[in-house]
Length: 104
Image (cartoon, rainbow, N blue to C red; front, side):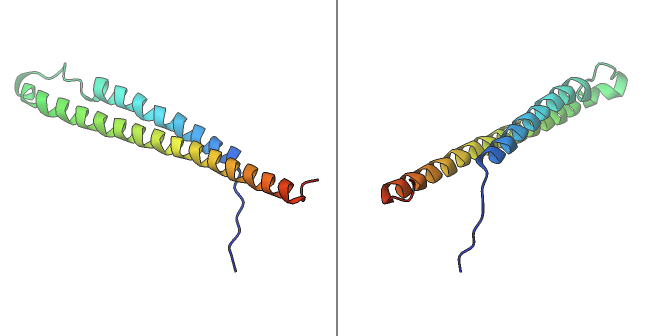
């Protein structure tokens, strides 16, 4: 017994667009984290010793968010390609049916 499933390519594209939008949020958070979270302008006295630590952590956090952005965009692109692949297979199936005389 074979399993059957139904795929809606437009739904895959919709999820892809959602990933694109959410990926952009990571960059917005990154910018805020580096500019606000890494702000050491008020550090005086002994706190000045923490400048490189705070800046380093903020930059590391920013790199992590940028990586997440890239991975979400990569997944988004994969969904688009998958949608195209399903449509090509469906079109090929329709063409085969027409050739066999079933698509009159």
